[in-house]
Length: 194
Image 1 (spheres, rainbow, N blue to C red):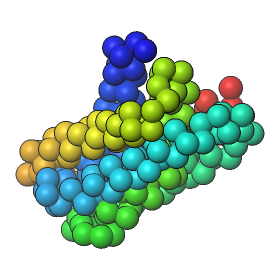
Image 2: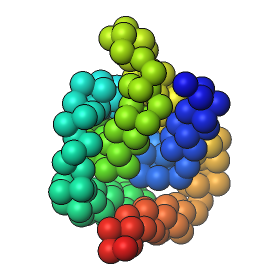
Image 3: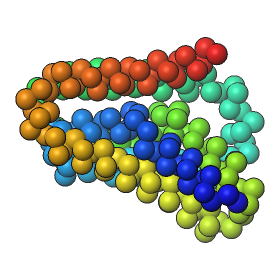
Image 4: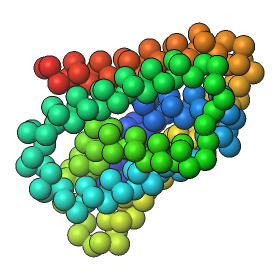
């Protein structure tokens, strides 16, 4: 197994700006770093469950991806657009923490086609051809989810570090983050149209 290629792929996938990272940054800019932690923990758990499911059902899903990919992409794009609207509307609201943010983080993973496709790709291309031990596979699933958690925490720290700056320019910055989310959704729809 080419561990360097695998690590590069995972790091590029989890640290690139996307719905997860932008939402974590937005939450931290409103409620501080600790306010974003329930959401980040939800991202971790949701990603871990998806990674395990991808490992168990990879060959089955791989055969069905061409048929379900358009529907998943549309669903994901719609959810990301809803998230963009929520970020835009939240300019004057306090951050929501607690179990709602935790379960929101979990739900976001199950509606995020990029996370699902990343999980399927990771296991079908990098992991399963070289490893068949259940513990090793579970360790890979945990490592990918942990990388996603670290990424969300880094983006949240960036949002929290600039909290005063964000507070003074909340409407403008929420608009910019909402536009980035719209760009994420449109890029998925453009890829679907190709």
